[in-house]
Image (cartoon, rainbow over the protein chains, first blue to last red):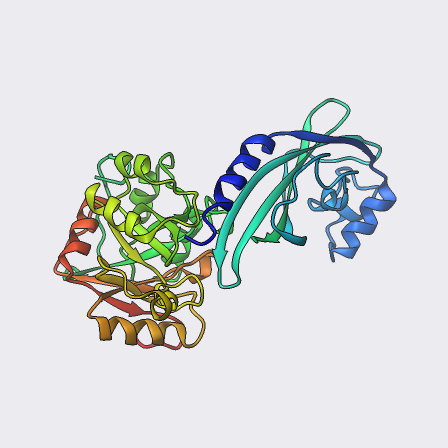
Length: 151
Length: 232
């Protein structure tokens, strides 16, 4: 195969980097931001847009806008071509996020894989952010895919 | 027996003279799948789709762990597990994946030589067939003009529910020209697309993956489209 030599490279990158935790940061949860996000999503449920509601909490997708300080770990190799495009985010809600919470987020390289479609072969790099509250409870997991063209 | 080796307990068949199976579906086990298997079952029941079952063909992996026997019982459907792997001649469905095949092939490799997939599948008692062969880049026929015909291919997916206009037409025409048998699958990644295309197995009862592999080798089947607007 013409480009057979790229496969071991990616496998090596996967072996070296998947599971590596590379960024840690905190986010303050304010009622104002939570309401603004929910309304921007078109949410009408008072649990998400009314801070006086007894079960007021962040909209399930709220953490998807909490970006970590780094996109990749230091010394992460250049794989694929170009800067890459945003392949979307997948969020899993584990527990309610409340106004006034301080969330600690850790960021990990969760997966690196290739797939081929009508557009050719693409490399997917999955960055995972896990958010925990002050009680160390996991409240949200966000997987963000970056897609790069395989060279 | 089911794909995981346990007895298959479903019993309903819509037409006793034939089995109709969707041979190409994806669940949330695939990176781009958005459908839960239970929701496929609910959709089939709610829409009264004329399907006796479906095969989960997750991308670049074989899901050995999931057990869908309870859903088979509850919904009267055969739920089987297979794989969709990627080769230098496009994507290939592999039915009857077992430990021998998993040991022989790296399912995550997107550049598997197609001859290897065909040969190793045959050796392991599995059945491999290219899917969406009329598709650009990832279809078998996209590579034929430049690289020649692959020996060992005798069956392809001629109807694929994810095809864009022209792709299935090319698949059907080329399969006819080359004497390939054809089957159908929806390639569904979301619940509402299951059953868009399927495969009829006349006068056969396919109760497990072993029977499906036997039926595919036997060649007595045909592709059917149930896409909205298509007549059955």
